Length: 144
Image (cartoon, rainbow, N blue to C red; front, side, top):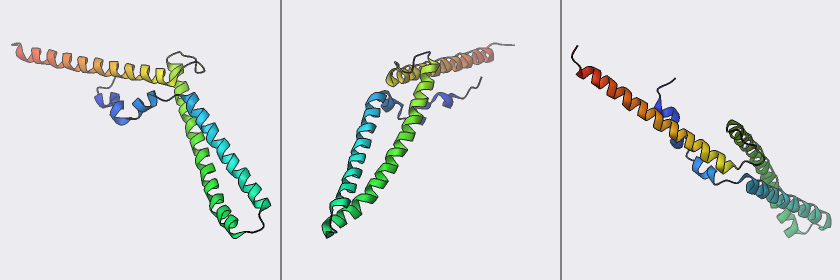
C-alpha cells in the first residue's frame, strides 16, 4: 500500500467531478439528438436551396458560407458523440464497481458515491498518518 496522499487528491486533479455530479446522461443524450436533427435540417435546407436557386448571388454567398459551417459542425458533433461514448463507458464502469445496473443507475448518484468513498479513504489515510506520527513521537519520548 502506498503512503502517497496525493493519490486521493482527485478533487484538485479533477475539478469537474462536482459539475459531472449534476450531469444527467439522458438529458445530454437528448440534447445531442436535437443538435443532430438541427444539423440534418440545415443540410436538407442547403440541398433544397441548391436545387431551387438559379445562381442568384445572395443565395450563392449564403450557401458558400453555410456549407463549410455545417461540415465543421457535423465534425464537432461526431467528436462530442465519441466523447459522450467514453463518458457513458466510464459511468458504466463506476456503476459496475458499485454493483449497480447501468440502465437504472444515475451518473450523479454514482459520482456522489464515488466522491464520498474517495473522501472517506482520504480521511482514513490522514487518521492513519496521524496515529503513526503519535506512535513514533511516543517511542522517542520513552527512555530506552
